[in-house]
Structure formats: C-alpha cells, structure tokens
Image 1: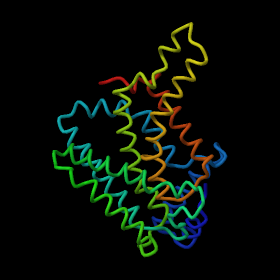
Image 2 (image 1 turned 90 degrees about the vertical axis):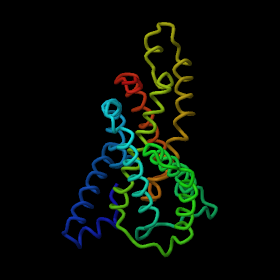
Image 3 (image 1 turned 45 degrees about the horizontal axis):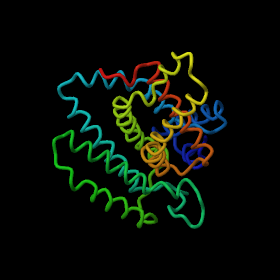
Image 4 (image 1 turned 120 degrees about the vertical axis):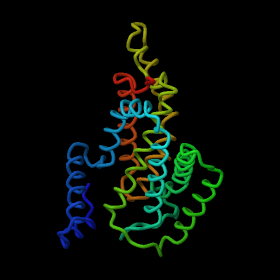
Length: 260
C-alpha cells in the first residue's frame, strides 16, 4: 500500500532514507497485489517470525544468558515504541473518537496495556524491580497523546520500522503463551480423529479467536496503528485472520507449541 507522503519525500531525496522509503513502499505494493491491499510489510515480518519463532525460542532457551538477552530485547523494543509514540508524521490524524468508529481511535489504551506488559517482562528478565514501570508508561503515553500537535516530526517509514521490534517481541510473548497452552491451537487430535465433526473444528477455532483476538488488538493492532494510521476494519480483520491461521499452522504442523 503506497504512501503518497512517503513517495513524495522519496522523490525529492536520493539519500539512504529515501531509498529505504522506496523499498518499503515497493514491498507494500507487492503485498497489495497479492492481497488486494490488505497486507503490509509488517505482516510479512510477523508471519516469518511466527513460523520461525518456535525454533529460535528453543535455541535461546538453551543459553545461560537467555533471560538477560530477552530482557534487553524487550526493553529496547519498548524504548523504540516510545519514540514512535513521542513523534508524529505529516498528515497523521488526531487520536480522538469524535463520534467516528475508526481503528485509530481505539489504539491508545490497548497499546498502553501492551507497553506496560512488555516493559515489565523486560525488567523482570533483567532481575530489576518493575513496580514503577506501569506508572511511567502511563505518564509518558498520556502526555504524548495530550501534546500530539506539538510532537517532533519523523518520517512515517521510519516510525513503521521502529515499531517492528515491538511487534516481534509481542510474537515472542504470544509464542511463550502458546507453548503453555499448545492444545488450544493444536488441531492434530481433531485431524487424527475420524469421528471429528465440522462443529468440533468450529468450536476450537472459536476458542482460538477468544484467546488470541485480544492479544492481537493490544500487541499488534494498537502499536502498528500508532505508527501509521491506515487500514479499514475489514483490512485489519484480514490481517488478524492471517495471524490466527499462521499460528495454527505453526503449532499444528511445525511443533511451535512443543517445549524445547
């Protein structure tokens, strides 16, 4: 999905930032050709991470410094996401309801929840006190929302890339939860049972939606929407559907839910 503001900036600048913006825009256009405009580069990153994350997680699990490494990664992702929150891009709409039921209006509060969880998890993995993290996250995010019109400007492409580590960390958290509740996304028992009915599949899918829907809203939708206000509810529903499908495939056929 090409961004006219990004394309315009790229046309007047031949430096690294312009080339990066052009590469991201080209990738978006390519994905749009396959999906009718529903998917973006971030969706591709997340799919690859969900499919490969199980193996990576088992590898890191065998390292003595795993908690320290993941703690640093979580804190770095949280810090980069704050850069996104504390900046704006030209043409960004204001974050407000204004009587309109838009995806953008519902992003701030779920993001505050996910940021608090990621930062708290990072502090705990580093062995540091985390009691103050939620309060700081609340003050910082609420202050930036109130001062939105006075925030410094940053190109939209760069803000999108800065939020990617947070999304991948979210995928790591989700993968850890899936490992604990692998039966929830594991369809092998149903596939191996000749007495399985369509209602059995629909019932399990319903449970998967109930479990993963809120996670996707807080950890994927909200941070991405704050980085770039784009996409209709229909597009975001398609993105969530792809996320759910890849998670099921990863657990059922790639063993992502199996402990290392």
